[in-house]
Amino acid sequence: MLMQRLLNQHILGSQFEKPDDVVRWMTAVQAQDFLSSLWAIGIRVKNSCETDIEDAIADKSIVRTWLFRGTLHFVSSHDIRWILDLISPRVIAGNTKFLEKNLQ
Image (cartoon, rainbow, N blue to C red; front, side, top):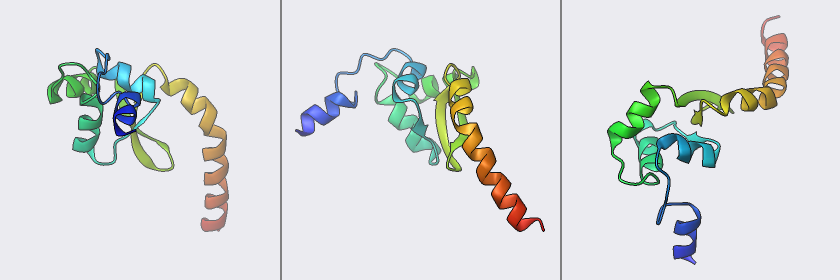
């Protein structure tokens, strides 16, 4: 059972070539703890090192942002638009209620 979980999560036997491949497969990777998030991505990329993940951040193929619940996540630059389109109405509605309550 443990081995199956490691395989399903691509921790063992991963075939991902780039950090962006991992982040796209996962949709988002929690990135509140920066170094742990680099590790979470890096263990799923074949023959990777920390600089490979940092390079993906620098070239903006993955983006660290506050899309979900005010928590930092890495998302792929390929996916960020549809995710924003999906969650923006809820975020705007929540912020509107907060602002109406607190700015009076």
